[in-house]
Amino acid sequence: MEDLIIKRRSIRRFQEKPVEPEKLTELFEAARYAPSWGNLQCWELIVVRAVEDKLKLASLLSPKNPATKSMETAPLVIGICGDPLKSGYYKGQQVTRYQHWFLYDLGIISQTLSLKACELGLGSVIVGSFDHTTAEEFLGVPKGYELVALIPLGYPDHDPPVPKRREQNEFVHFDRFRS
Ligand SMILES: Cc1cc2nc3c(=O)[nH]c(=O)nc-3n(C[C@H](O)[C@H](O)[C@H](O)COP(=O)(O)O)c2cc1C
Image (cartoon, rainbow, N blue to C red; front, top):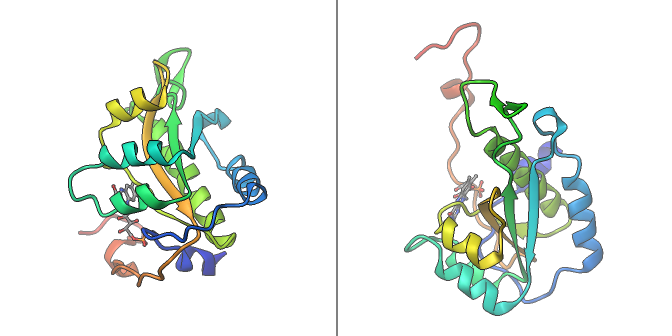
């Protein structure tokens, strides 16, 4: 597992080879086991397959987003949606100071998908910088749900180096937070 965590990279170039339906089933089977607030599993995933749809999504990315080409060429793009009023709410009332715990759950399922994809020999990149409103309309996301991330997925066509990471001693605090 540790190897997988270290091996996983954001993949932004894909082979043309399609993703086998059995692999996709395995991927989503793993995603079912992601932890979530109160086990509410507030996520909904959209698998975008048509070339013209992927091109449209690519056009909605922030200018110069490094994932633009990957959105155009990946065999699949997974839309990560969620209901913002489940996680962190009890009987409609917000129960902590945070309104947006659903983002946490969607982050966890995204990482679960990314790691499982890597295990299956697939590559992915989590994309968060795009015109969410237009993308939601385009993908038919119903009112009450939000499209938070897009994840292009396919067989990797490059092996990028590890972007620089902070050292443990730069972010791990024992006993008290020390600056
Ligand atoms: C919430 C989130 C949003 C991201 N959005 C984008 C994005 O819009 N475009 C992009 O190219 N990469 C995006 N990334 C990927 C990061 O740039 C990448 O994870 C980071 O540079 C570390 O590289 P690595 O994933 O290869 O370890 C995003 C990652 C996360 C977790």
